[in-house]
Image: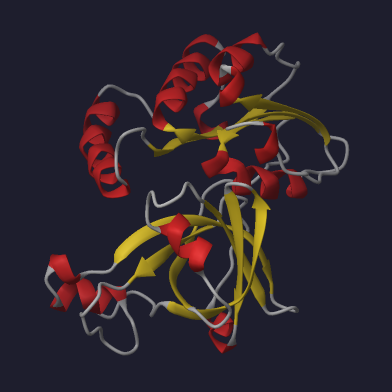
Length: 271
């Protein structure tokens, strides 16, 4: 129903930073940041809204109104990004973008972004944060999950054991990660043929209850879902696992595919 959603948060680019050859950080702010309502999740995410050229949108920019009153082909294109950090005192919100040349939408936008450029954001959403019930934590992902993994590491209580597996293109894509936890971080490089699933399978599980966060390309996510639930008996309520993207699919194609798969998975009793 129109009017139920909050208007989009309207921000301006403050500065950009090339973190690695293929990762760009956009730091945004401005008066519109007062409209941002943060949550407590490590995987807090926003939908970045890319208006379609030549289309006039309502003011304020409200997706509820747009969906109710405008044809679908005029809806803005949406892409999802993890909030890398939100600092109300500094008046800053940071998003990290993977950039592979002209491929995709968000990466090229971030590569060409200049101070003063506008961002329209909906959200945030989120579902995962390190919990006190776990005796140790497992974090697994690729570049798309790296911002959430970085936030999760920063949230870890001091001394708690954490085992981390991150797949990136090559050593140049590694980033410094801060944590008070007792973390062992293993970087895996596609350029060297490293196998993320094999690395996780080779891990000697620690005693006690594990909480796991596994996100990234849908292929390895599916394999690790079977392994962690079926072979390792990880509790479903302590497993955050989802494919952020699928190789060879656009974001729209992947979201449609996920929506079509979900009823079948639920019927089969899979999370």
